[in-house]
Length: 266
Image (tube, rainbow, N blue to C red):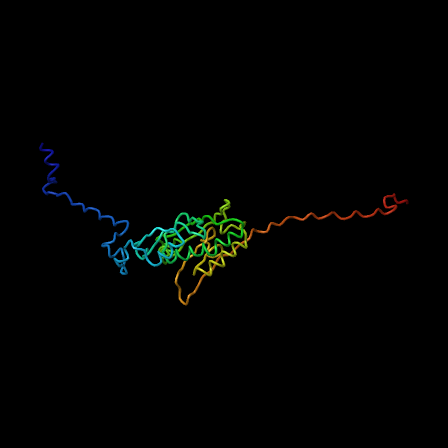
């Protein structure tokens, strides 16, 4: 018992007494992310409670006349991401009731979704019909995502973070054909028509030859720039030319020279 008390209490060393030193606790680790301190911080300075409503807007009503959508009144943050009057574009309705399915269905700002749906109905579908079949589906690659441009850390907020952009991969026809928009084996005239109409409709069109990030899909958006500047960078490429070695005919044999093979007499 005496030994136990000595170990738990003070330790006598010669004539002096040494007290156990206090070891400071480690500092708490900082949080992996900073949680917003209030709803107002997350919503942003432009937040208006009237935006959060189940009532459709004028854009929603126009779009519902020729598209199937799901209303997403507002997406909030983080930072400057999100926006109001967002929709999920599920399909576009052609004359006669035929539908172009959009899959996965992208989440977009309604004004941008209206432009995308109008382009599919008025330009893309007629261009596809000239190939002998009806456009039945559009395969998307990326839509709303809170990130910097090209997913580069610290870069300027991408139009994807505002619901103002979508990436397209391919068109699927009613007869089962899938036409990759960057596939060099797809008809060049068809892809030329799509590029030209997209560049008239949208302020940004990026594809092969733009910046190395869009070699396998087409990016379209409605970014607002100074003086109405537009960007159309989509090289409609063709299959590489394969060089085939030509067969070179052998030269005609020389005629025999009389007496050439006789031995020379000395």
